[in-house]
Length: 489
Image 1 (cartoon, rainbow, N blue to C red):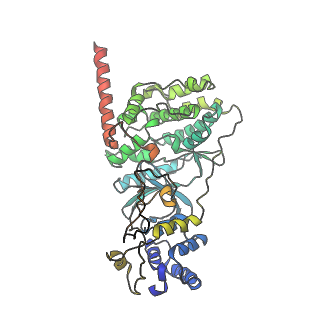
Image 2 (image 1 turned 90 degrees about the vertical axis):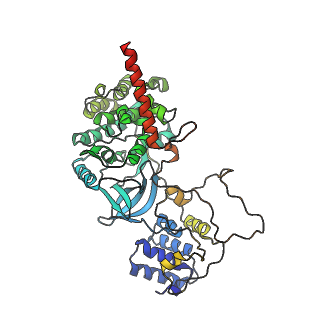
Image 3 (image 1 turned 180 degrees about the horizontal axis):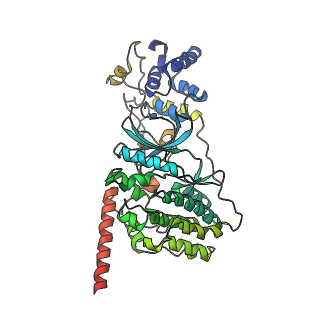
């Protein structure tokens, strides 16, 4: 198919070819059949047709319409949809070329680095961890300058969203959730695998009342192995600051000090959250939370929820002891305490709300809004190459320039947000001529950045995660020195 036959869809078809999502022969056949019936079709109409035929996903179509062609294929995985962003990276739904199953693939920002040799050894160690609550770490790799981690995809709703929507949970329900988590932890701890980042957003309730532990394996990358750290300092600091609400005192002082006892402390914080509806130390900035985990006691749980049984209060208290030696000798011992409480009553676990994807017409609507050229664009010549097309500075393009990073679900699907007075673009005066090449300002979402609900800030200044960790460490050391000094006198 020559380029002159593509008409207005030429640049979109070129981008499709560069994306490696479709075989060249199959792509030309599908596009040829569509344009034979719709010779004047625009790229949004072609993309909508490809989505309706299940050839592209909505995520892929919108991304291509924005002129972004890179990063769809990472090793054996093809990215199908954006699921969300966290402290270490953005998570995507992906399909494996090997077995056609669905996986959750976390794409790390380009600045993150790790020792792939050691990381792959950690992946193989998860083959020995067999428990329904553990979503095993299955692959790690680098493709096109992007680093990725992969787990089998599970569906449900994370615990933090469930508590936010439904409020605090009954004691027996919280005990059943904690029991499944503790059983999964115990199996992994026996194999020398530590989670290290347990928090409500890493606990998912499935549709069949099954509890899943997410992000199992990232803690292994953060821990120092064979005398070297698997990931860079920035990635480690980002993970620590994003998980402060449930981080153990010892991991706050040393992010690579990940132990089974640390997972117990995090489990205690999760239980506290489920039973009270709030974190143990909900107030304050990052440094204040670090200090609180070190030296303060949370508000008594029975004051926040008088219905919590005495046995559960004792379990939470022991799990959240400051000194690791004061906690349970193992997750197995905590299981024995939780099992009687989990067996009382027959209240089912909270039922997750499976959210439907955006409606299909939004693909074309968003594409037309983003691709509307400020000035008419002439169709390229028949032999114009993609490189020449993108390199020509004088020809205005109807789409944003290609960038390598991948957007989050909110950015891709154009979730409506109320613009502030300062950020809203000024409307042009009536009758004013459009500025050639002008682009509408849009919020930029950087994969791997800390999301709004995970952002760490100080009262006046905002420091990076490394600065926060260092300042908190200095503060804790000072408090410890003063405590020892006064004990001497």
